[in-house]
Image (tube, rainbow, N blue to C red):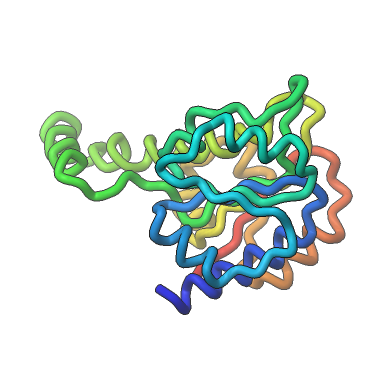
Length: 206
């Protein structure tokens, strides 16, 4: 994981240095988030979501820091229970999901898969993994989309998002999303983009 953490950190640095605003990075777990943070070197104010972090603390950090990075964990309170907007507009300019946020393999999740398999057959994995994953992605992306005037980029840092999983995405996402496995090409597209509406891209974290 240390090598992968360093690679993800490098990719995040390349993306976020091009963002003139606030960036939110969503991780699949606290462990991965901390591994990446150890390897990252941002010249910006940073805050990490911890289990004891309060929503009010995050908002107090965001409001005065017009250029900053927040590291949060998918499926936790900062990804689902906080509105990162001010006067009806999103405070974010970038949302990056590091990996697709599939549910964790717990005993409860295993039991749920078994139940849905008995009830829905080959649709069970879609109902227990695919749809929940899409829901979390939509919640994360929605932090950037609070009004028609909001603009920015959304990065899904997982190569699977450009393959079969892409067909599960919303139609607008599929039409707008551009896949880049080379971080330099992705950075160049962000740097030269003249799009004034939301721009969806896909990169690999591998």
